Amino acid sequence: KDVGSAIISIGNVSIGGSGKTPFCLFLAKELEKRKIAFSFVSKGYGAKTRIKKPFVLSEGSGPKYDAKKASDEAMLLSHIFPKVPVIVGNDLLQACLMAKSFAPLMIIDDGMQHRKLKKSVEIVILDSLEPFGKQAFFPRGFLRDSLNQLKRADLVVGYSDVETQLRRYTT
Image 1: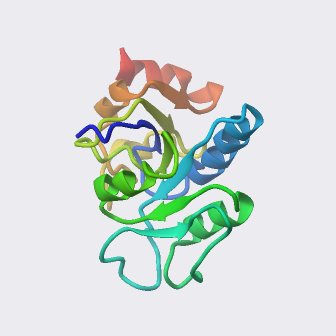
Image 2: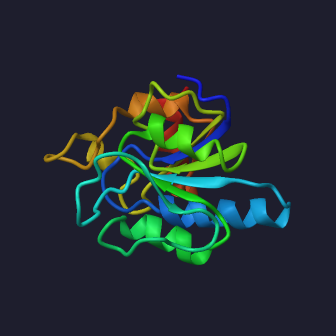
Image 3: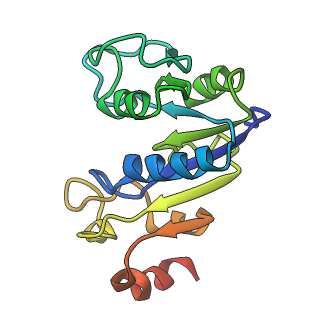
């Protein structure tokens, strides 16, 4: 589905911390330097309360709610970038439609598995310790998506020691 705005999705193929949120922070700093307006969209995974529908955590003046309502990642984004709108919700399509009213560009933290959402750029972050999730799905390994999905990535961020393995799945 096309929401009519530019979307940069930061994702991964494995479970666990691969560095998606730190990469979102890095990208946001670069966009701010260039004075490009954007908003963050976060799924809210790990919030203490169940998120029933997307909500605006920050309209560009810091977080409106506490950490119980939003995830740690969303709270971090809203604290480090208090002037950037942050929309939180498991339904990324609806969250992106909300974010579109704030800025023409949005960064989605953890958006790779949402294939129905049309993205402008798909960036995949590989876990430096286990870049290919032991090549098995959870619980045997750490994969949450097929390694063949790496072909959809516009950019893969990893370390030089994974380049040889990466070529096997992307060419």
